[in-house]
Amino acid sequence: MKIIAYLYSDPLLETTPDPTLWGWDIDRVYQDLATEKKPRFQFQQLLSDCQTEPVDYLLIRRLEELGESMEDVSDRLSQLESLNINVIPIEASEHNLQSEFLKFLQQLQYTQRSRRIRQGHARNRVKAFAPPGKAPYGYRRSRNRYIIDRSTAPVVKEFFERFLLFGSLRGAVRYLEKQYGKKISVSTGSRWLTNPVYRGDLEYQNGDLLSDTHAAIISRDEAAQVDRLLRRNRRLPARTASAPRSLAGLVMCKTCQSPMTIARVTQSRRKRKGAKEYLYLRPTRCPCNPKCKSIAYDAVLQRTIEQICEELPRAVSGVELPPVEGIKQGIGGAIAQKQAILNQLPSLLESGVLDQETADLRTYNLRAEIAQLQGKLAQLPPVNLIAIAKTVSISQFWLDLSESERRFYFREFIRQIELSRTAGDWQLELNFIF
Image 1 (cartoon, one colour):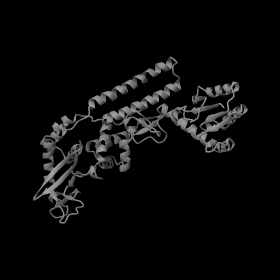
Image 2 (image 1 turned 180 degrees about the vertical axis):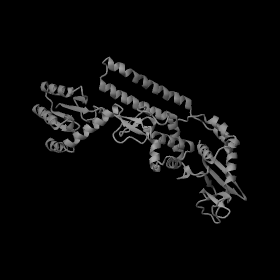
Image 3 (image 1 turned 90 degrees about the vertical axis):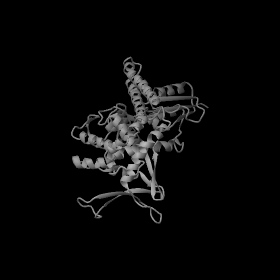
Image 4 (image 1 turned 30 degrees about the vertical axis):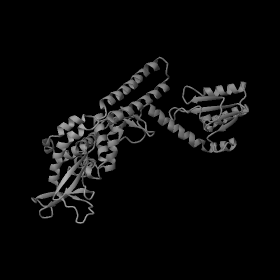
């Protein structure tokens, strides 16, 4: 008994299947790829071989792999039947060819239409065309590419700059409405911050990312800083990222294990012009009886600054930092190597070593791999932590900052501030991020 197998796949839609996937002892596997310039050469070879040497069974994954239309499938099944070959589609729920073929006829129109649409999208991806749909705010379509919309791109740019300055998503959203009258939701603003389009990249539905496909609104360094701020803000309680006070969301009472919020009190218990304002840190859900008392905000702030200046250099010196420079060089070398291969493709195409379809697909895969490496590179620490620790360990540095700026730097270094109470006094314990 002789058993052969036939595989047909489209490199644009799937990875080339493994010829050993059958789980049977196969005498020979014939395999075709869906390319416009290469018809089903291996299938024709299969028919020719079967005429000279009889075959009992032909294994295929699905009936639809025998052709692009119902007529093609029917003709090829007839050819195989005339050679007394039993066709077995291994992914079919049952191996009754007649019943499977009837089901196939019912679904063929939908399946082939869906496949043609997916093939069209795949060809557009290979050519780095913009995906279907409306262009993101700040861009407009020009044929199959995104180009910057000069009337709306400054609004997006200002949004990113505001977020980078203060690290507050809600604050940036409010600023857009106040400054430009542009109303967006917080969720929309969050999508803007993570949208690869604003970084000059395209991300497709299959998850592939291509870099430098169009003009960017923010630079690579700005994009890396945005990602770092987003990761930092995820550690904080909700809404504290945009709070006006620098210690918001950082202080916890160690006695009652309750987060501490900032309470504002005026002399007349209501805000009025000229009334003096007092700020306190108090536990939000203290279970103790009597409850833990509030503590003056300015006193906690001053002691926090003093302890940062004293403890930060010591904490940094004890941290085993990864060899960031070596990692960057390794990733940079891998990017350069793939870029060199990319630069060779035009000459290979011109000399006839590669055809246009193969060159386009190879270009697409290389650009996707480069984009992945660039993403890893962007996640690495961009600066020398030891050098920064020396700068921020000067008390005057903190005193010269506004509350918003101080909030930004506190969250770069501090994960949490624990306030412990002793008889008539209190102490702070700083938990650094590293």
